Image 1 (tube, rainbow, N blue to C red):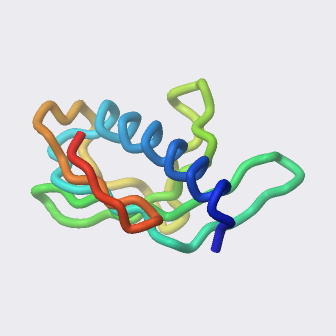
Image 2: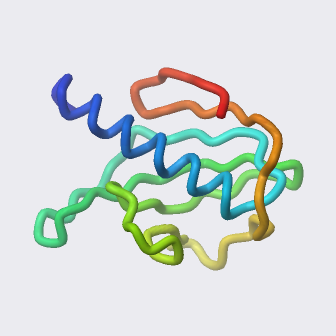
Length: 105
């Protein structure tokens, strides 16, 4: 979907977003960045759907990239309220980025 140099930038944004999610929500086991992106050229960002797997199930949320500096902005859900428990995930979690690379953070 992205050119090679664009994909590198997108994955860097996803790494920031993954850390933000880990610091915002509790009990995360895995984060998966989906390959479908929505572009908003006027606002200057792209949005991606992210599956967040917790001990209580899976929630799909929408994340704006690049991640805004304001920690309370840029993470939301179009399908209703986010069901993930607010808190912080302390343990290491697996992250799968849109280029299918993986890492533990």
